[in-house]
Image 1 (cartoon, rainbow, N blue to C red):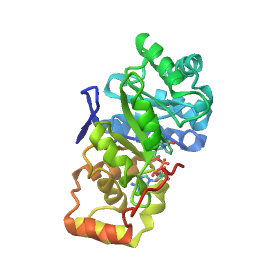
Image 2 (image 1 turned 135 degrees about the vertical axis):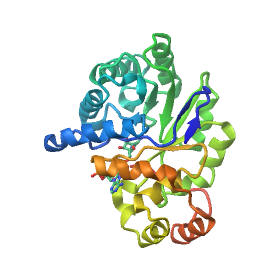
Image 3 (image 1 turned 90 degrees about the horizontal axis):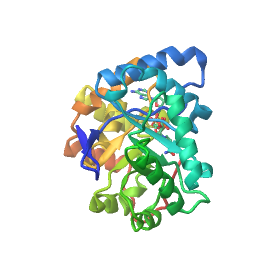
Image 4 (image 1 turned 90 degrees about the vertical axis):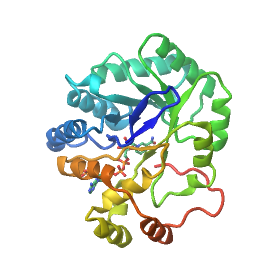
Amino acid sequence: MTVQLPSGETVPALGMGTWMMAENPARRDEEVRALRTGLDLGLTLVDTAEMYGGGAAESLVGEAITGRRDEVFLVSKVLPGNASAAGTVRACEASLSRLGTDRLDLYLLHWRGRFPLAETLDGFAALAEAGKIRHWGVSNLDLTDMRELTALPGFCQTNQILYNLTRRGPEHDLLPWHAEAGIPVMAYSPVEQGRLLDSPVLASVARRHVASAAQVALAWVLRLPFVTAIPKAGTVEHVRDNARALGLVLTDEDLAELDRAFPPPRGPQPLEML
Ligand code: NAP
């Protein structure tokens, strides 16, 4: 299952997140094993950020992808406070050094801050020119910001946003806009940081498919052809479980049951972020 970027390149629809990794030294080896298992299973889109663990998550990702860099579609993010033109270049170079690589496949503005978008885009352009990033995109941008962004020169490849069964607000206007613009959305916290997984409704749908609640939550996000998802799993077992979501196709009955429990938005809602 893949999603096509505006560049024409395809990326795996299901990837892996890394927020909260590298926070506990006792879990580090298992986290590295989890990421490597994900690569073995084709979850080769790996999302990280300079923010995560103050750079420690990027170092852990660097370790996990050692010797396997070419298999990975590597995504990282610049903090808004660093996102001036020169600051974006400096932040990216520091990320590359922690990741042990010479390039990112996709570099995102983590959320909109005090620097004008055009300045950050100048930084992205300089990085692309130098071969340090292949593509750029954004995160946590709502419709007004996306309209402003796409009026500027250059090609945004994705908008990484909070989207899962309990955060359906973007379905009202942001997701339709993305579908129309041909810019994919990358859904973060697709299992609501684990909070969704106790839902009896997910359990009921999961039972019908002999699947897990996590697989149902992920298959639901991935039902849209222009959406990728990046669950974070810190154990090999959870990565294996999540990878099996790729084989799960929800029926109309499943979708109706999920709609009753987690209703779609009735009107515009501001984009939420975690
Ligand atoms: P998430 O992926 O929705 O949930 C992660 C939690 O779910 C972890 O506690 C994990 O436990 C658990 N989990 C995952 N798979 C499971 C399974 N199969 N069974 C049971 N539990 C499972 O939340 P997230 O980490 O917030 O979001 C995912 C990624 O999106 C982040 O890691 C980060 O890369 C990105 N993100 C971006 C932003 C942004 O502002 N752009 C914000 C938030 C997140 P274990 O760790 O024990 O496996």
